[in-house]
Image (cartoon, rainbow, N blue to C red; front, side):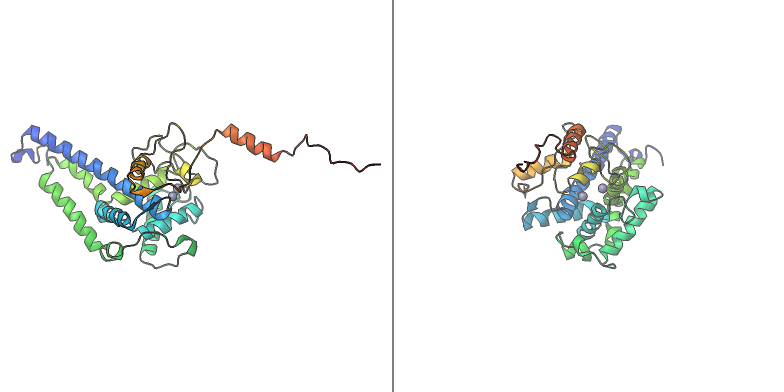
Length: 295
Ligand SMILES: [Zn+2]
Ligand SMILES: [Zn+2]
């Protein structure tokens, strides 16, 4: 195949350029909408219940997640259970996806996949503390989530590209459209516990990878999120921007979601924390002596 793969079939170069841009835009929009639904619906709502919404809105976002993630749709129940285990066992051998306990990225993802399938298909008992409180929709999560449907979804994406993509190299986007959910999970699970800076000391290896998370809509503030697990805002410092939270503020203003009872994350400089902790630890040196009994 050559650069003129499709241009030779009657497309003008200008039309080809516009089409190429349209395909790049399609890929970027699919990436962002998909990762937004993952962080907003599956993670912050489904796994953590950081805010509330009506049943109608819950169904709307559930359906949107199913349609946008398509062939790699992540089951909200399995996602929530695995994710709650990740918080409870962060970077220990029981963590479903810890880069510090796996020899490489692919082994980590393979282990996560196997554990995810065990939970999704109910092959393993679930500790009661990790179970319940997540969105469930048997039609989408069970009946319409199988290999045949996934292959069908994948074929639709492929046919669309084969019919309209003006350049063969655009086909490189196809695997990402097919595996959007796990690709985002892999980036967050690996980089978020391997690369970046820390605002909070913790027993795990969680990191904040980007100060403006343009890649995964705020998911890469793992260190902040492990400290303030119930806060819908994953950014805590003045220079940090959590894009999903900005959209959620808009949803809040439009009364689509209610964050009024949500946890508020905060950050204070390490010195302030150290001083306060030190002050609490030192016995009161100037305390008045206890009154003596009289002679
Ligand atoms: Zn984490
Ligand atoms: Zn979480």
